[in-house]
Amino acid sequence: MEMSAAELGELLNGEVIGDPSVRVHKLTKIEEGENGALSFLANPKYEAFAYETKASILIVNSDFEPQKDVQSTLIKVEDAYSSFASIMDKLVDRSAKTGRHVTAFVSPGAKVSEEAYIGPFCFIGEGAIIAAGVQLGAHISIGEGTIVGEHTKIEAGVKVYHDCEIGKNCVIHAGTVIGSDGFGFAPQTDGSFKKVPQLGKVIIEDEVEIGANVCIDRGTLGATRIARGVKLDNLIQVAHNVEIGANTVIAAQTGVSGSTKLGASCLIGGQVGFVGHISVAPGSKINAQSGVAKNIKQANKSWNGSPAFAFNDNLRSKVYFKRLPDLVRRIEDLEKELAKDQSNK
Image (cartoon, rainbow, N blue to C red; front, top):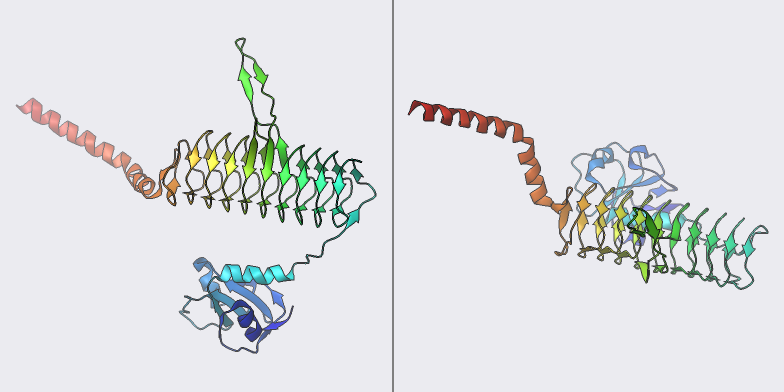
């Protein structure tokens, strides 16, 4: 890639501030910017680097007003982060491979498109369907009757159990397991536990991205469902019969217990825990390390703490919590004064 500021400005529909003829041929972080490099500023925490960076061109948000001299040519856009991502996307080699590695095993009853790629030591079970443009890395297992939609990319070591459905244009990263048994055991009178058969499936809709080492359990009956556009970070547990609404984003180490339903467009921080059989309203924002123990019925509201409650109320409570030792001392002093007054009467 080599482009001028003028060309980038036109591509991104942005306003060029500075020399439109300056050219770039590489991408760098703002703190590591150098001559010939393109970088961006989206987070205000990094603004100080904008005045120090040697990057030739800097993509910034349209409301950015420099407080000091900036050496870089600026391109002002509506969303600097998304604009920089679009430039990175153009640099990614998306040429799809086709064919089967000699070590792959494809069951006779499986249907594999000639336009798909099956990597080393893959297993494709009986009745599985692998659509055109699918890219399977090494050591992947696709169970019997499972469907993988067009142009989905699955990285090394992923295991997809039987009768699951994965949509189009999904990305599933290494080590993830889809369709494993839900955690269902019925307590017996003798204190033991009887396993409840898990007869459902997992349905993953189009445009979903799933991080590394995620576990998504199949439904006991019916389906565990991940809706279109969901983004899951690494190390997430999704239990049986969970439903995650469209375009919800979940950060690492979150656990969602069985039959819980998360609405569309939720933003879930890291290490959040959800109890089972609850519903979370669309647009909910759950702060990191919160514990959600009951239904959230109000849409587009922020929550914090364990058990989680309204974000602003939680912050106020923390202010009072810090003052508890002082408040206790004041109460004790008042009780002593009251006791003195009573004894003097």
